[in-house]
Image 1 (cartoon, helix red, strand yellow):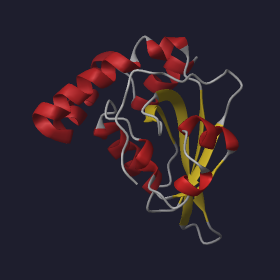
Image 2 (tube, one colour; image 1 turned 180 degrees about the vertical axis):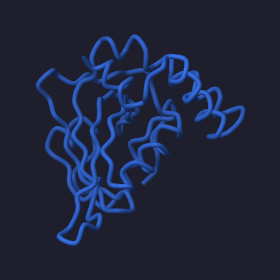
Image 3 (cartoon, rainbow, N blue to C red; image 1 turned 30 degrees about the vertical axis):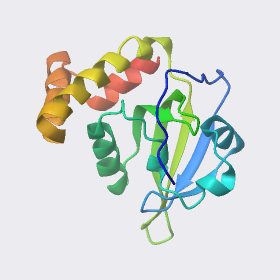
Image 4 (spheres, helix red, strand yellow; image 1 turned 90 degrees about the vertical axis):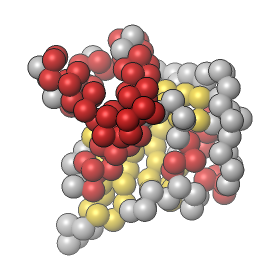
Length: 169
């Protein structure tokens, strides 16, 4: 499936909206709730079996997804703010919680994500932060972006998790 060209139209989640999706261990979508399907603009048949990255907006720094995959492959949950790209080129922001689903033997069966509307506090910080990370990434690769993120967190004296969660309160 071809990636869409982004435009400046934003879709906004309602406060009580929850987006739920599951992917296999390779990141291909195996489930999406009605809210997920509706906001994405794709039909369910278009999404199932497709890499979740079909929704990746080019404004998202790769370092965030690198960090996300590192954590969930280690069976650790992660929270992240994500800007997603819709089929029509519009976008929407989410506050995502991603976890690994384990089988009876403790092996990763799939990945489960629940997303909701980000707080207004997050909107005051995340777009600018991601712009800076993306700029570093474009000039020095993902390692430069990771270095910048770690520097920012060190200067704040806070872990990634505490920082992200503090913005949602």
